[in-house]
Image (cartoon, rainbow, N blue to C red; front, side, top):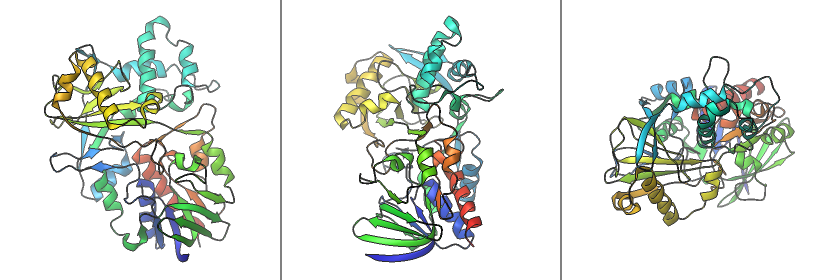
Length: 429
């Protein structure tokens, strides 16, 4: 076993870890970034195929809302983004009609009583808010929560998604953009100066800490120990919740009580997103629509590269439906795609199959270094993200999308990395 020392060790080279490291280095701190995978980016996973003139996102894809940090970093890096705007359609048995998805869902979400005791979304919907008038809207709301929030409606907190007065509960879904060159270009820029301070294939298995120092144990190709004055842990909630003895799990000595309380109130959402490349769209290319909502199968929605015209689509499945098909084989996924698109657009599965050139996906739920897609708040939990954002003593800090505002987004991860870096810089002499 060998050892090395730095001012700060950052565990994880996703958006939060890379931004934390960048900020700490800017303040003159020596940093060591330990990443379990053989790549940077975390839940950003961009695939580049030389046959396709677009980056294919297998993880994070969109810029949600105003996202001031993400936007500023893209500008600083000399990278561009594009606004994604377009109507919502709903496809069912060969008919595609326009729907006001955000408006209909907001009509339900605005009925959540923010002064009442918290309950699950399923319990809230069981009260039939809006009565018979909003029956269809309640169905769309359930699918929206399962899809956009990747959540189980029997577990997610209604209060956590309730809009503030005068605001929209679907704003982050409605106001979106996309990095033109792919999210990996931003990750590469964030890591550009790390050099030997970035260690890939270094899975952290143990963190021992007290109020003076930390010791981080790595068990990869060899067993190593690194020491520092502080550590910023940016791994996903699913990894923090995993048993220390399981693949990707981390043992803490002593147990950080605040972190354990916080993650007990957070769930990891499940997502299966499949990127499909067609020879040409087997249906009307849907240029009127940005998103097409689906029925009769596990995928809740598809979207194209709009406003770019190219025959690539993303099929998205979130929540319990995603959990049900997680671990499926390539052949099983392809069959699901064929049959659901055929049912939606009123054609035979063979026609879908004949025009499909390739498909890609990454199963984040079975990935030991993510164990899910992104986080949501459990019913009854009291602001667990804020609890997670507080340091444990003077040496143990946490960051990641679950510990930031706008949970589940790259913006939240970047914001949390900056916040953790500020906390460390204020704490260390």
